[in-house]
Length: 214
Length: 240
Image 1 (tube, rainbow over the protein chains, first blue to last red):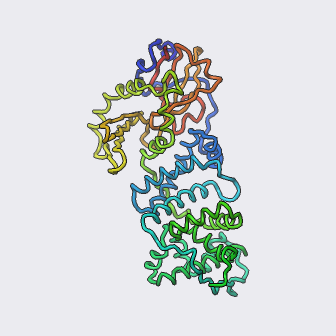
Image 2: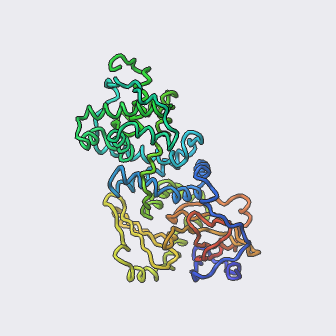
Image 3: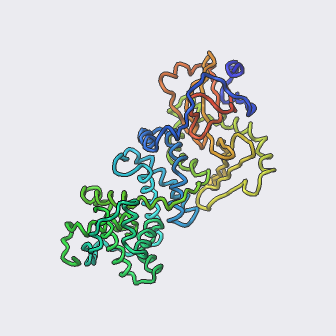
């Protein structure tokens, strides 16, 4: 410590000395705690909303591997994923004040920002047809008798409901979400016509909604 | 249902569109339409929220992948570069002092040749063509990394220190050493080594001629204890 306090008064800029890596500051003791253990992601987002850069760097360290994985999976290109990850954290910095506890878990909220951004990038790169102004064929969407059966309470509701869709349709729903696949890509993957895939997925969504509410 | 749906009021259709939006299957233009509706239609926004919450368990499929170390510096640069370039806010220019960083860089120059000499083939990692060329220079057991940004248009090569460790990322934290030898954190250096920092009002009294500043290597994000826990790598006094 003595050589810290006896440093001379030359300008700081000019007086920079490198010291051995073994030299440690010895100062008042503090309670040791792990930042990531003690503070939840929710707290960190709250502090980022107050423009706390330290909280932002901790939030980045804690959550970036997950969000980078999302960008990589959807964009399938490392350079694009890196670029996307930058955009995602810029958005997180800017939007942290809009995070409301309650509806989504904090990590789900962050993941949604990453997914939405990555999907926007991929849709811009590989355009697909507009559909929401067209008629939706949603016939057949009434609950089927089997869906009226009381669902067993085991496992998560979404897993149970996905099982009810049947393997192919559940896979299509999951891959659309996880990989950001378009209707056309899904149709190619399952070797069905585009319109068939649209009908599959839309009816699957209605069945899921029905099932989730039971 | 196909054609009888009333345009905006068919909740079954809305439910499907909300689900399609969250799944990600809509076109870019349709996504923008959905988003503009989210801002004004609370019932529809609630449908999207519910899908988001229902389907978020699929997020488990994403196995974490560590992003490149340089990404965080790039994010900070994008977010904070502007404030870093406003020396008027910091009359003494301490934090932006080129001399400070030059001093740091020069102190490390001796190390660079050595780092490159024993580095493996990955030491220089130039990236993409559009973005600036960036090299991360690292050495075994070195308390810091150096990140070099090359701007091809101006021909400038900026070298800035980034604290680093072998296994986990580190941060550099700036400390004010009081006359009684106690230290107080002034903040964590941005990973880029650029940026300004506002001294909290209660510490400003200590920022006087002769006050000593020090930089220590801390866990990423700064000292978890509020006192320096890592090696002190730089010390200097302030003067007018």
